[in-house]
Image 1 (tube, rainbow, N blue to C red):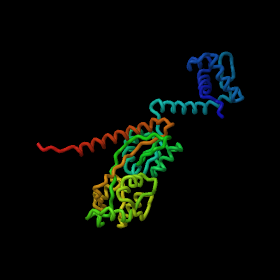
Image 2: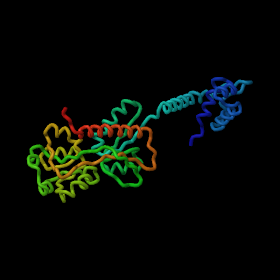
Image 3: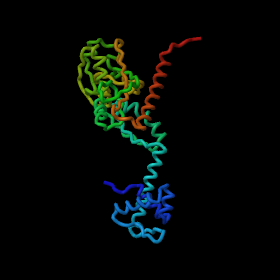
Image 4: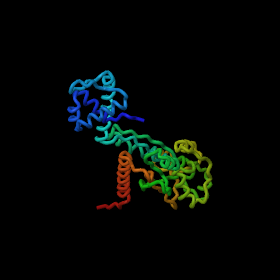
Length: 309
């Protein structure tokens, strides 16, 4: 347990500079008795005297000369720390994000924040939505970004981005030329994410009632691994369009049309109900809201009718 206080060290340093208790008190805005009491308490805590009293002057003795350099170093560090927080508290933000968000959305959010506040640091843990919730409940993350709704009363959730899901396969698959029947799509070998992932929850809540069942040929915990299987022509899958935009645009993969089903989900910001968001978390939250406004604006423009003069 620490017994020495920064105030006592500050008084000690001031007396060593001025050589007088009264002058040191004036420098620090303390009375003579408070100044004397502080240095006396420091000496009591250390079990030594630090000054020789010579008339009205006080002079450092060997114990005081030994203490002065580390005391000044500690006071300098404390001053720098205080000035840092006055200028704006540095961020050491711990973020938990589900895979699609962590891989395809979060980098674009963090890059501007990192450029604007170079002293801030971000620790990002990427997993499925279930693991993100577990990290928040255990207070191992300050804020979370997930791909599925939750009902845990210990967490606060805030509706965020819309996310379009797409069923896809390799471009030369027969389903890409002729839309499959409901039975054919249900019976196809599906490559799916593990239970607990946002993609899996979306499929089970939206597509499963339409198909009745999935022929799950393989479960994988990695979107990249799923894409590699699809590249080999082994089955069909579903993911966020954000995750396969490049492959769809290049023609390597092709979407499978299911006109009867609208595959859309929402992303959520999540944090512990009993924890106040830090300044760093609020900055990230503001960036998330700005991105949502941009995407909603773009969606509104795309959906607006075109008029020809």
